[in-house]
Image 1: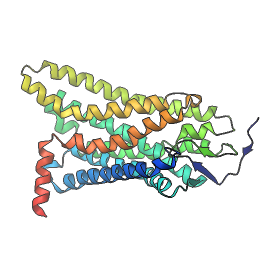
Image 2: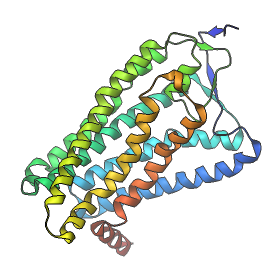
Image 3: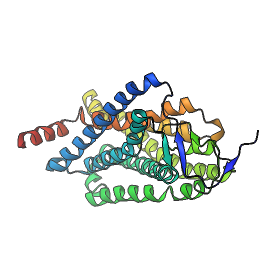
Image 4: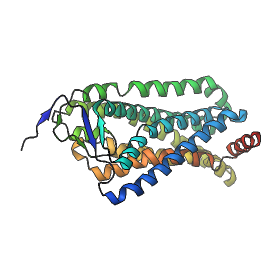
Length: 308
């Protein structure tokens, strides 16, 4: 049967993570706990960096921007998901859905640039330490951060313009836990070729280019570390970038697997799982792995606690 198109829709229904009633409360409690940990962890990073003068360096300024972005990233999605789990009210207005999609794409785009900037920072620090203060001055660092936010905010405009013109089918059920691009295209009755092409083009230009820049930076970093004669020196050099390498592996792995493929290959359960990885796991791990083995950050925490 041909699905009936409806052009002037006013709302969608988000199906969420599970339709089993007995699982709603446990999932709610788990997501709420993770969301609280994400907010607390990233806010702690911001407060410690801003309150410790010895942490006012390019690496920590970029980390602060990453923490701000992670708070915004999760807050764009998790509060609505928590509301769905608690109240079972799955309706989201068309405008709210489009706004959520806009900020999701914008913040993801800004994050890939920030991660590339952080890789460049580690490359300069390890491969060209004598030129670090000139190549990664606070002015250059601020410029990279501002560039990431501006590109992020501009990037979704083309996607949103095309998606807002699509027609959707009578059910309007989004088989996901937020308004993502693939499930929206899946329920559209329009030709989605232009939107998919936009996704591929922007994805190739932005995601793959920043991934390649990050990869190239780490190739040079690894070669430089291997040239260090002492085992202690190699271990110390690698420890300064291992945390960042862990985060980008999870982030880029899930992003490329989910979005660099046609909408026809959208598998709801698989996509929900991988989406949770970069929406919840990465923002949760960032403040932990960037700070856990960092003695300068620990000193900053102690100084902040002493002032209280």
